[in-house]
Image 1 (cartoon, protein in one colour):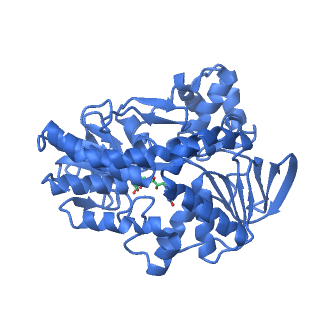
Image 2: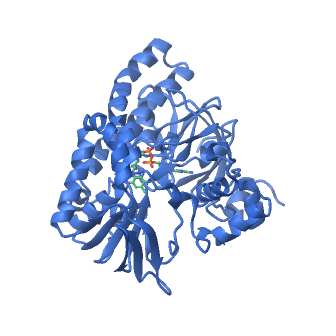
Length: 464
Ligand SMILES: Cc1cc2nc3c(=O)[nH]c(=O)nc-3n(C[C@H](O)[C@H](O)[C@H](O)COP(=O)(O)OP(=O)(O)OC[C@H]3O[C@@H](n4cnc5c(N)ncnc54)[C@H](O)[C@@H]3O)c2cc1C
């Protein structure tokens, strides 16, 4: 690994792969870093190694990735798999763990294409063994062909619930139920956005097809569920929820939960980029211009890390950001940049037409985000409950960082990825300070755990 590159891209999903291919094809020396062992990102994970039968079960969208990955492989971009980025500064110094050793490299331009992660929503029992994120379930399936035993229940909200249930069904798993928080109110609010969404009909058609297949297979599908709880002494034994005014219980030892995805902003926060609270997507996201440039010079962001848009949008955004990088590096003039980006802009605009509909339909009830039960663990790493967080706020610690110092929430190995939003919601609820005005956890390196040995490997010539 060299010490300096004209362009470093972090993340080998659709955004990073598309950007790296464009930049390399224009003669720029690109290093693409990704912590996964193979290219593809979340959506096309394991695509090169997936046996035909498994790829077929995952559906046609998954197979789109083959083209993207092979174009990247045929380009001259340098690819560094199994490489974690653990710090990024405003000066574009990048801390990396590669082959078990820590390195510091730098770049004239950095493109963050690190994607999204599942929105953590604390509810009673969510930390019990047997309760798992649907995305993690899908990763096991895509990467290793591992599926849960018969009787699995999927709960929460978002298109991934239906998709995963459909994928499990195709893999021969008996899915017991899909329980969605979508309420009648969500449908009513989403309805005006439907005509525009129908222009991107492949998403809607797919969703309806998944629903129909699941119903025909006898899977219980319920919308508008509330008060989801997981129960069990040592591990998950059952779940309970409210539906249409009555309480229900289902026995299961496997619950897949999903409440949509939110941008992975740890790197952009660490680099000092400006962020804002996006009301419709119920998450923070970086301030970006139409090219993906952030508020920090030389740092661009593309794909879901810049705001949730889906895989196709990520691919277009990656290419558009790459054209901007080519301009910034003097490889292209302004006119060429605009011309090259034109087609991707058109496709991206078309693909994004479905978003307002999805955002209204799958909006998570505010009550679920703001008021976890007192006994619910909010910070899984440090085992801090909602009660302890509320007590800290009542003691006068009225912003997220004060709550963090006082309770240690957000100080564990995940560095607050799992609890920062939940803490911010509780703070907003208790103090009545609107979320958009509240502070977020300050992000300090290392963003990913690294050992003292790895840290010491930064200074191989030091004897003490
Ligand atoms: C769990 C999950 C499951 C999903 N499943 C589907 C699905 O089935 N169908 C669908 O249409 N959409 C799905 N989505 C959404 C879809 O994955 C995204 O829209 C799309 O992948 C976005 O592409 P991207 O290039 O922005 O990021 P991603 O595809 O997420 O790629 C980001 C890459 O960055 C890497 N990375 C992140 N941080 C670091 C770091 N610090 N150091 C090194 N590498 C890093 C990650 O390993 C990843 O490979 C899913 C999203 C998630 C989070």
